[in-house]
Length: 184
Image (tube, rainbow, N blue to C red; front, side, top):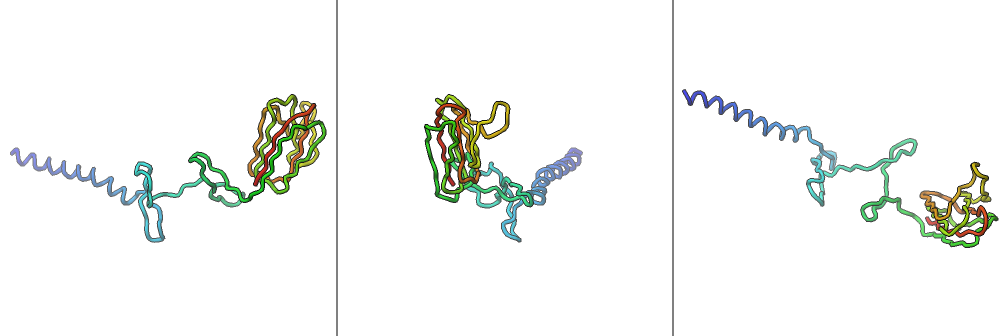
């Protein structure tokens, strides 16, 4: 009697155990994520637990930028593994350290079209600098009035992807110092 009772229990346990082990494996092989290597070959997706130097099963995931019509992959280079920046295409560079900016507008022509501009005001300045970012005549607006950009003593502006051939700068009062770099 004991044998007739335990054989069916053992058979049920084997069926359930097999289903619990085989079912997830079957689902993974049927419904798992895969990436196309070619039109006819697919590779299972691997995550970071797999380790480094993965040569197949890597799913391309990239931030996309909308250009008004389509979404295009963001492209750039990695510097130190932490910063992604657009590669530059030129070799032109402009740099000036001016310690004689007064209340007369000064236009600083780069001699090329920039991609990036850095403007630094000395911490020793005693007044604001006002900047016309497109190279017109710089004017310091009255208090609480919109106008050209203001650079307070010790401030820095860095403009990325900013195509200009010059900028103009003026001191709110006195004689002030500014350092300007532009490059493409």
